[in-house]
Image (cartoon, rainbow, N blue to C red):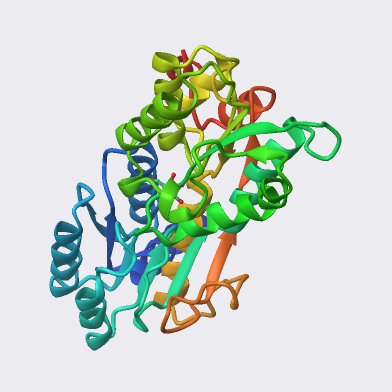
Length: 348
Ligand code: BGC
């Protein structure tokens, strides 16, 4: 009997402890859009883990509309969230909401994308964005054997959204590997579109990338020349390029890079239409951010592993960088199926 009573007391104390930690504490989570697969996953993971930890969660998606995200975040703050976690549509457009958070003493975590031009950003959690780019650039370099082969090879480039700070890191990481070969003439960009501003894809949308790729194919490859590689910063843009190639290109299928391991792109990897992707396990990022939330609210030291790289124009934001992982047709089963990220049915 004594044992049962003390077991019961332990249980009551443990429960009291958990609810004391998160009791009544509310976390606002603002995601950019439901249009792209990854943000749905990020939002779901965050909600699940935060609720399991005992927090109330206000999760909102903003339809890639900057004003909508600004209103949503402002409302979260006015409704008394204790911490706000934001994956911004446009890094520098949430200034007034961030000022409000600062005024009310509400910590702000930038999720995956850095919040720019504000000193109200407490922490940043992301994947190593520059490394994502170097993994993509190195893949193209190795696949074309740029150091040994004679070439020249034709390359085209599709990058991300200029309003997303990450897009520059992906582009720079890849171009730091490939630019020397463009300069030496071993890589030829027939379209002449090389600078970030020329190759960017506003809102990262598949159809925007597809329209630009259609234009390039019509203007520079209708003469039958081959494209050897198409550097794409992520999967949504790679999909646009793949659609354009399928519709309007008869040459040898190029090497195509991507990022995220979106379901359509993994299917395309299996079908030989995309060469690689970069797996950024959104479960890992969400778990890290939930840990950050707990540490902030408990007044503990917050885990960071980079205090130098991410300057947002006002401050250098203490960051936690998760590791991106190379993925292709040879390791996708282990990375994505065995780890339970996707089911086999999802990839059929
Ligand atoms: C993310 C990428 C994603 C892109 C488009 C970036 O900020 O880091 O993983 O592909 O946004 O959603």
